[in-house]
Length: 133
Image (cartoon, rainbow, N blue to C red; front, side, top):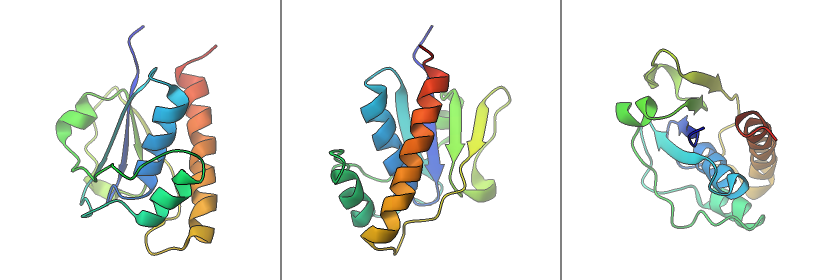
């Protein structure tokens, strides 16, 4: 079986989608192709998201928000949206999930930790489905 490809999409690609991509890269250990993008990417990744992930030993400091492209969706097996609304392109035959998560933008570390932990839990579940055994 080929390596599954997962795309995480949120509006700014600065918080939730970056944390999800960081967890999947770390926990998937190279067994999953990981992408993230935003419909309106921010200038830089949310520093509080970077700090929250650093607490768990995952470094997002070098990541940059990326613009969502049709190709990124087409080339992904699973597309997980996190509040990107109607701007996410949809292709038949893809697995889509919409994760209802609070936006960490403008929040302090105490508010971002539970969002981070919820994302980790969802990533662990996703990995169990994508890579059984």
